[in-house]
Image 1 (cartoon, each protein chain N blue to C red):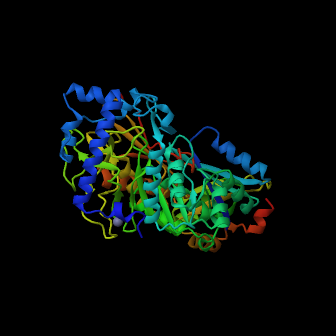
Image 2 (image 1 turned 60 degrees about the horizontal axis):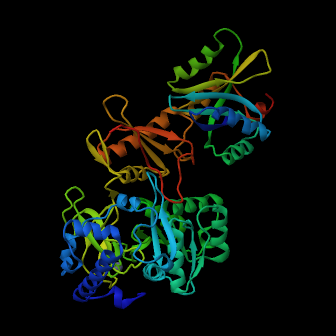
Image 3 (image 1 turned 180 degrees about the vertical axis):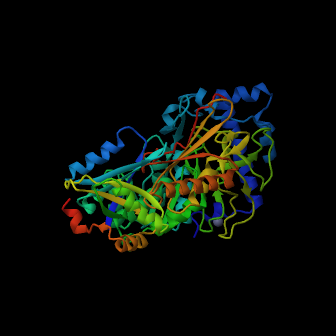
Amino acid sequence: MAVQISVFIENKEGRIKKAIDTLAKADVNIRALSVGDTTKYGILRLIVSDNEKATKALEDDGFIVKESEVIVVSVPDKPNGLNTTLAILDDADINLEYIYAFVSSQPEEAIVAIKVENTEKAIEVFEANDAKILTEEELEKI
Amino acid sequence: MFWNEKAECMTKEEKEELQLKRLQETVRIAYENVEFYKKRFDEIGLKPEDIKTLEDIEKIPFTTKSDLREAYPLGLLAVPRDEIVEIHASSGTTGKPTVTGYTQNDLDVWGECIARGLKMAGAEKDYIIQNAYGYGLFTGGFGIHHGGNKMGAITIPISAGNTQRQLDTMVDFQSDILTCTPSYAMYLGESREKAGIPIEDINLKAGIHGAEMWTDEMRKRIEASLGIKTYNIYGLTEVMGPGVAQECGEQNGMHLQDDHFYPEIINSETGETLDYGEKGELVLTSLTKTGMPILRFRTKDLTSLIADKCECGRTTVRMTRITGRSDDMLKIKGVMVFPSQIEKALLKIEGISPNYLIHVTRPDILDEVEVKVEASKELFSDEIKEMEIVEKQIQASIRSETGLRVDVTLCEPETLPRSEGKAVRVIDERNL
Ligand SMILES: [Zn+2]
């Protein structure tokens, strides 16, 4: 399980860049990132090296920031790898809200952040199916 | 208990006698010294002597904001310039500003009216008034200041803005009363919470707020976030400035200082005079001003009057909260809407900031309304689905308040115009 920070991005030129600049200036590393957007605004979701520092820097720059939990899973880097992982959730009737990938240095695996409706249940079924859930410490090493 | 018991608790007979005497004097001064009024009277063959009763005021033509604009800058003075000691102006969002010149007498009356209000809010001579209204041409800052001086209280002329300094002053000086616009009071309350200053560290007891429209929902928030009781104050530059009317501790209508201003309520379309309790446009006539007396000024503010004696003991007529301005009213898809209704709808939703902007367009033949609202941490979610639920809630709330289906857009915090004077709430881009 990992804590992700989400940032509200008004659909105005340069706001995503501004958020990322803010993090760079605060010396925060971005490990994974995704943008969910509608026609009117976007939600920037990030997994970073230091949540506290990131939140403070972003809030000081006027952004709305929220922390939420996601599950970070290692997916075998082979055909159908992701399918197999998602099938575990599907079989247990757990709704997937969104998913995005990490930039990984290990060539033999892909790492994804998954947000589901019921995090606890998802962890249970992942564990029961021997999916590899990354701990906070393991995340640090990415 | 009262600043001026004799003036504030008169019997009906005493008051009407005084009002008539003062009205006749004001009409005479205006007719004899101001070309504009003389011309208006002569056009319809009206003479100052024709004002024999208070009802005769209805014979006098209305004065409008555009009349004042045409007289820009000082065309309506009733005294030589050497008697004028101060000038204020109301910002001209369209056209020229309207300017008011005050004699020393006028400033004394202004101070008197404000002092009555300060007393209603519990002020004493040793109270510290943190005056966060803007100082300048805008009447808010100086008006309160004159009243504080009149009372002999301690006025801190901190003016609007510089939130950190406002909070520091509240804590360091232990200010007793905060005077500022309601939106700024709300902002200061939010800032106190954000800065983690415990409510016990501030000593504010009362807030006197006006110069823009606000609702009961907003009042509750200000009172809770600053630990104060709030008093709605009313006034306008064209007539004097803040202090024409203010609430007492009953928070049930604003006591209008009717020994200095004579109020009427009219139907804004027909101009006909309405009764107590009926809602319409407020019309004010000054009864004691010497610099720039004003006759039957159409304020455009919609309210009603309460004649009954207040629980507090005062007999001055009360006006109810302004619910809109006759020129603020938007007609959208044929429906009458006031920005205050939108505000009310927004404040019903938990975690919403009352900063909004109503954007009306007519891309084709139908009106479209977009309401922009500042998002907040409480409203924000990492899931678009959740955000859509929030937008739908806002939409539904506005719909139940106004009957209109609007488009809701969430914006980043503090990106909509936030006011220290008056807020911009409506952008109407239709070519009507
Ligand atoms: Zn009262």
